[in-house]
Image (tube, rainbow, N blue to C red; front, side, top):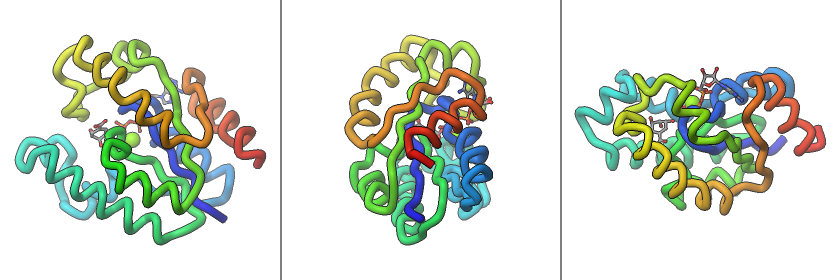
Length: 164
Ligand SMILES: Nc1ncnc2c1ncn2[C@@H]1O[C@H](COP(=O)(O)OP(=O)(O)OP(=O)(O)O)[C@@H](O)[C@H]1O
Ligand SMILES: O=C(O)C1=C[C@@H](O)[C@@H](O)[C@H](O)C1
Ligand SMILES: [Mg+2]
């Protein structure tokens, strides 16, 4: 089976929905953020603080290319992965890309930004990043699924969109 690739803003629910989806589909689960943290033995905030964003994005590309060679996976992408066209292009080639569309205000007001280095410049900066990213997510997505219910309900909506 082709991969199912989840994209969307940080905190929209890719990791939580992805885990539920993988279980429901009997597929494996991979999370690009976790792959990078495991490979480097450091947390995302540490990586951003010591190496910077460009270094992280290069790793993200490498992980995307590696996962794209596999199949039968639900892949939760890092929120910024689609800002590198080469990274999301390789994953799109490997599967179906789903944009989990959750309102930026809802995310900022309810999701902790403690471990999200690019979420720490305040509410307006976060919402501006959402506005910049939205067309990018839309451009790559085959399906756009509102992510405003529980992870289970959002996973169910993804299954229906995939007709699975
Ligand atoms: N559809 C949803 N509606 C409301 N809250 C949700 C939804 N899906 C997940 N959540 C909650 O939002 C938080 C962020 O979810 P999650 O970590 O899955 O986001 P993410 O998209 O993987 O973020 P990141 O890009 O930073 O890895 C979690 O606390 C999760 O329980
Ligand atoms: O949206 C982003 O740029 C990010 C989202 C997270 O998944 C992590 O990849 C990291 O915090 C950066
Ligand atoms: Mg995640």
